[in-house]
Length: 282
Ligand code: AMP
Image (cartoon, rainbow, N blue to C red; front, side, top):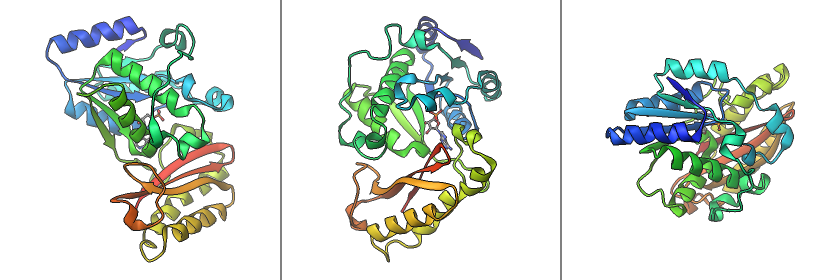
């Protein structure tokens, strides 16, 4: 595996691969890799001649400076995990390399309504930052496929929108299922920051979401929403920021089950000062 740190090295490497007629799969990550990330890498490995994994904690998508400064960084462990998955390139640039003139590049993406609700409403600027870094990585790597996890369900809708407005027409966006701990907690780089008490409480999030599927459609969307919020808030140490049941394609809140072909419930929960995210399909 090559570890590349400059834009020039990555563009040259991917140009060479394409010249040889090889397909490229890109897996964008912020590192602190766990088996959720590796499930994307394995899928990419199986579907492409070459796999590029980026490991870059992108400052422009953090709306909270403490979240950025406490974000776990484990580059050496990441490199050995990726080596074990037969990844061709780990792209691990500096912030200066990606944003030589600072993160504010004077361009905003028209992300439309999918970016306005939920994470878009709670984390101003977050999705613009995500669109900015993912579009850069796509321009540098020119992959045939790019892989994203459904843990960040809304993010996939935003990336699809970005790819369509920015003209990545031949790119295939591959969405991959959520990977969980045996007790149900969605794998996340932020889980290492949970206190032992909060780590014990956190699996209740998935358990409550999964149980709520049995309530629909006998109960209304509003009733299911309310019962999920109150059940999670009743767990010591957990506090719901939002729970919304939305159309899986448009991300717009629904008021009746028949409003969506596929409904998905998206939650963010504070476990102490760690913000956890999860979702469930109905
Ligand atoms: P991150 O490093 O958190 O930006 O995540 C990089 C990619 O891995 C994103 O597409 C995430 O959705 C995906 N990912 C993170 N956690 C999981 C998980 N538990 N299961 C599946 N995909 C995940």
